[in-house]
Length: 131
Image (cartoon, rainbow, N blue to C red; front, side, top):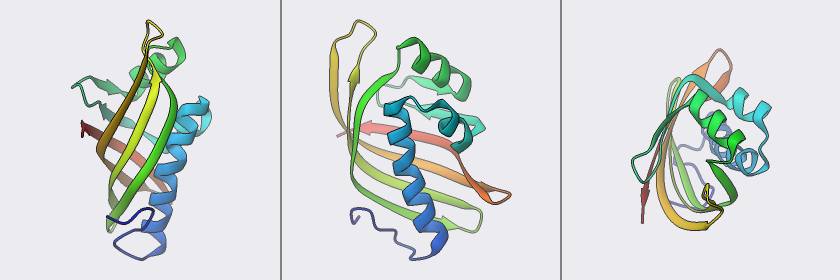
């Protein structure tokens, strides 16, 4: 994997790679409108500890502070694009606050699945593992 580089050098793969990175900025900034736009209604978010969230649950937990990222840094990411779907494989450092306000700082390897709905890419699944 090369940092910020897509395996398939095409405009859609590049667009998905940039979109996946912006999503993390929106998560730390609590930009709910942009997050709503990029996530599919059937999205499934699987955390490195096995915690699974639907789109609705993710938004509820972000708003309540149960899910609180303060910094997300992508070290590597690559995209494999297949017609109207794309897979992002990335590595990053995720920092935030637990509900009791204690800090966490974990390095994750993650896979995200995007599908093209009409002309927009939507996140449908994310799965992370600790490294």
